[in-house]
Image 1 (tube, rainbow, N blue to C red):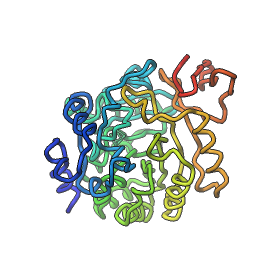
Image 2: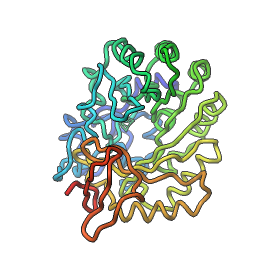
Image 3: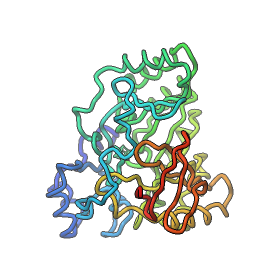
Image 4: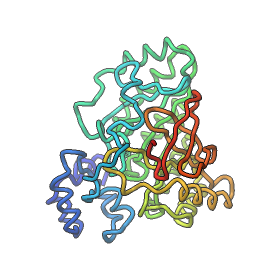
Length: 347
Ligand code: SF4
C-alpha cells in the first residue's frame, strides 16, 4: 500500500477499529466518549504492529478512559506555545529558534501528544507561510527553524519543496529541522521522491519519534536508511511513557537499533503536562534512574533526559535539577526558578 493509500484507509471510527483489534470494554468506551477531545487516527500499517491490551504500540494509539482524568497542573497548552506566536503558524520560545506549524494532520494521533489542542483539527491549517517567512527574514538572530505540526511530511513533495526553497532563500542561513513521526507510523512516506526533495535543500535534519522497539520494523529501518543516504542527519526524540517504554532495557534496545541505522538517539523527554496524560507520566526519580542506565551504553546510544518546563519555561536537562527533600528545583534558561513535585507537576 502506498502512503497515500495508508492515509485514505486510516482507521478513524470505532467500527473500523473493531474490525482489526479486539478492544477491551475500557478502550471501546474511551473511543466512544473521548473522540471529541482528541481524534482517533491510525494507519493500517501501525495497527498491524498491535498486540494485546498492554501492547506499547496499542497504548500509544488507542485511547483508554484514563484520558478522561484531568489532574491539577495539566493544561491544553503546557509549553505555552500559543502565547509565543509571532506570526501565523510561527512560535518562538527561544532566542535563536522558531517552530513553524506546517500541517495539523498526522498519520497516527498519539495519545500522549502535547499539541492535541490543535493537531487533527483542519481549522488549524495555516493558510499561507508568507507572514512567517517574512518574520524570519526580518529576524536573523533566529537561525534554527523546526518544521512541525502535525506532521510536515503529510505535505505533498512539491509543497514541501517550495517551503524548503523559501527557507533556503531567506537572507540569512538557517538550520532546517523537520519533526516527523512518519518513519514510525507511515514509513512508506519516505519515498525516493521525498528524499530527492530533502537532498536538494540539505542538510535537512530529521527529528523522528520512535518510542519502542516494537516500532523497529524492516519498513521503518528502510525509511531511516533512505533518509540517511539522502544526507539527512537523523535524530530521535523519545517520550518516556509509563507502561510503554519506562524501563532501561527496552530503551537500550531501541537506541541500539537506531544507532546501527545511523540515527542518533538524541533526547528522552518526560511526558508533558498535557490534559489527560497523567497515566503516561513516570516520576522524575525513575526517569533519571533510567537515563543513568542508558548512559552505561555507548554515548551514541545515550540520549539526554530533558523536561520541557511547564508554562513555557523551556527545556532543561533533568540531571541539572536540584533534588530537594520534597521537590525538584529547576532554573529556566532565563533564570526563573521552577519547582516540580515528584511527577513533574508545578508546586
Ligand atoms: S505525530 Fe507528533 S504531533 Fe502528531 S499526534 Fe503524534 S505526537 Fe502529536
